[in-house]
Amino acid sequence: MTSVLAPYLLPDGFGRPALAALLREGSVVTEAGRLAVHRGTSRRTRRRTPYAARAVVRAPEPVLLVPGFLAGDWTLRQMAAGLRDRGFRTYRSHIHANVGCTLDAAALVETHLERIAERRGSRVQIVGHSLGGMIARGIAVRRPDLVSGIVTMGSPMLAPAAHHRLLTGGVSVLNRLSAVGLPGFMSQECVSGPCAEVSFHEVRQPLPSDVAMTNIYSRRDGIVDWKACIDPEGEAVEVRASHIGLAVDPRVIRLVGDALVRQSTRLAAPTAVAGVTA
Image (cartoon, rainbow, N blue to C red):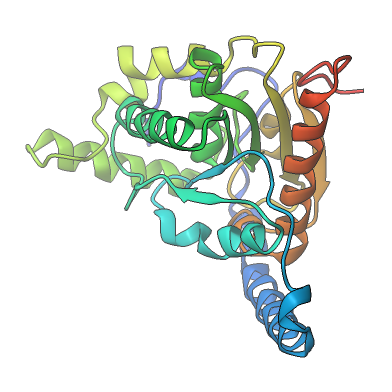
């Protein structure tokens, strides 16, 4: 089957996960179970803790969460809850299903960033899962006045088409729905036309020096090529999780929180250099 995606979206050196790789996504059941155990333990601990001792120190910067392709804000609900437990103010992207034009989704997120930044009087950190991380990086390039740092999870920024062929099939379905006139779906232009080219080149632009970035990736990722998730301008953090599980595994949620704290601290230091891997 001929791919609907532009060839430049899959540069040399990157590939599509094999069919067998998809089987690794079955570990999301274990990861979700781990989350349930973690939340149960947290609730019991909270009940045993005196009310006066429950307060957490508020993080200085708000956090906006952006879901991946075919997903919506609900997929990052547990991530948001875990970050709030650590003192972060979290905000939704208001993306109900990430199935439309990427540039339109980015514009929506940018609008919400403006409102959050104005309300809180500070720049915002963004946590993006898969496509959400690519959207976050593009916005950070354009609007460093709004974005102080980003954390990507399984986001194939170096090769957006380095994903499983079943995902490409989903893109084809969306293209056909758009072609028959249904609004809100990703068109062919979004994956092989000018729209796709703008998105691809924007996400490859250098990050401003005062915007930090952490790239969380997993070699067990059964959806995207993990090598495409490591941006040379970011700090790479490897985890052991499925692609879907990146959004729910409590171990990943903890590392995302650690990255947000680290980035906030680094950017506040006079000698900090953002987004450079040691």
